[in-house]
Length: 223
Image 1 (cartoon, rainbow, N blue to C red):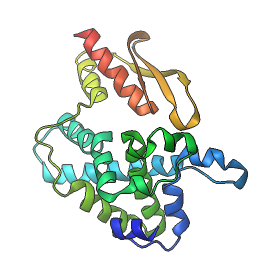
Image 2: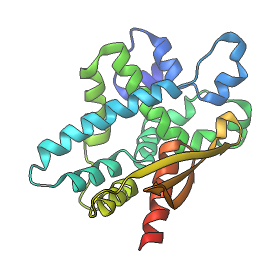
Image 3: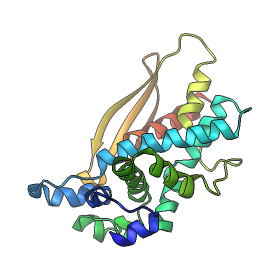
C-alpha cells in the first residue's frame, strides 16, 4: 500500500480505505466470510466527485462553450479509456486485489477494472482527507495535460438527448432488461425508449456503459 500512496501522492490516515479501493468484487466474493467489501460503493462515490471537479474545470476554462459541448468534453475526460490510462501510469494493476479467476484471465490489465479502481481511489481519498486532496489528485492526474479539443469518445446519451429535445413532449427512458455472468465479470443489457417506443439496445460491463451503448444504437437506428 505504501507504493500506491507514493504513486498517488497521498498518505492515508485510514489505510483500510485504500485497501477497500483496490479490492475488486471477485476478491471480496471469495472472502465473503471475512466480511470483506468490494470497491463498488467507492466507485459510485468517486464517479460523482470526479464528474463534479471536471465539470467545474470545464465551466471555468471554456466560458463560451454550450452545455452540450461541455458534456461531451467531460465524458471524454472521464471515460474508461482515459481513466484506465491513469491507472496504468500509477501502476494500480499490480496493486489490485483480484479473485483467482480474474487474476488468471488478466483482470489487472482490463480497462474497465482499472478505470473503476481510479474512481475508487478518488473516493477513498475524499473520505479520508476531504474534498481538497481528492480535487488535487484529479487536477494532477486527470486535468493536467488533458486534451478536449478532439474528443476520443462520444457521449451518446447526451447526443441522443439533444436530438430528441428538438421536438417537444419527447421522453427518454433507459431500462435494465437483463444481466448475466459472474459477479466479477457482469454483463448488463439495457433498452432505451422514446415515449415508450424502443429505439435502441446495448450491453456493457456496467449499467452506465450499457446505457451509452444503447444510446449509440438508438442514434444509428434513428439516423
